[in-house]
Picture (cartoon, rainbow, N blue to C red):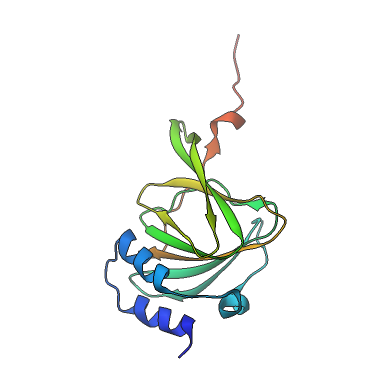
Length: 165
């Protein structure tokens, strides 16, 4: 059994996992880029990143994310899900946001996540992932329950105010 199969077997046994449980499992995995290369998808459907679901059951799903060089995701939440991501190759910046009203958000801090490190996604987190490097970034994300009801947000700095005189 290879590393990825072993991980999927462990995930399959989880029931209503917490963020800490997901992180614990991902930290124990020694995934290499070669282990998931066949799941690395190119951007499509108007996205600036590639995504490929590699496991899904009623409790959770696992997704491989590919952020090409100098790209980013939209600002989003994870609906009713919690999650954890393991960066397998490259480096990303996790930009966090807080709500500013009217569906807009403003920055609330950021941090870098390097290869071999995990990024947590607790319930209600709003964020975007940025690859500010000249190399691709590949990560494995696990969400519980499977993603549904995600929302995208507009940064407050992009808002255009119309005044009626």
